[in-house]
Length: 109
Length: 112
Image (cartoon, rainbow over all chains, first blue to last red; front, side, top):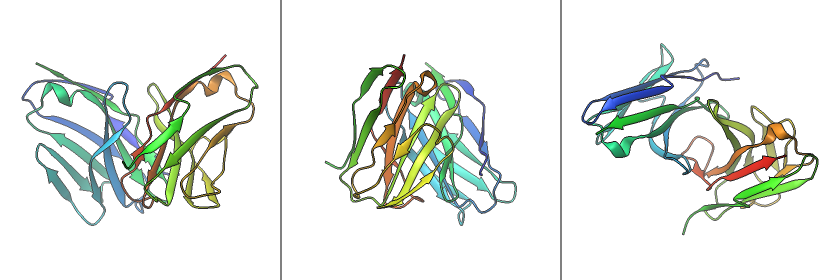
């Protein structure tokens, strides 16, 4: 089955800095790549997603880039704010959904 | 209001006592799935269902059963719970699998 690796497991940045989280996957047939944000005690919620026919997608301060050749995709958050502090999960769809282990992002004011 | 509901939200039980966690969605979604979340392991898929009467094993199906007799409901059954099934469980649904998944509020299960 699909193997999804997510790095780093923890990330601490100063408010206003950028944060980058990277995920790699193993099966080139995977074709949908969402990112979820989970605040403490809450359910995961989609923040951005990308499909395999697109290389980059942006939504305000959040962007996702996909490199199909290298089989990796990344989440970019610019101008980070304390409310961006949460656990972020990447996921990969290939007949079922596989999630990465998560990255705990802390934004220090 | 479009939503995914789970019951119960919290459950403490003992080893071997059968239990069912219910999941219901009101969005007419075809795809539903169950995940367990453990520290450092992310979300691991237990079972998923592409449509009524169609279910498939995910990453960690051992010790669990599911059924999909109607589109809106996807209960998770633990026939003989064990302490290693202590976890936070999420149900999710989406229009089809390759789409945004909408998660329920979670069920925190403790098996003593």
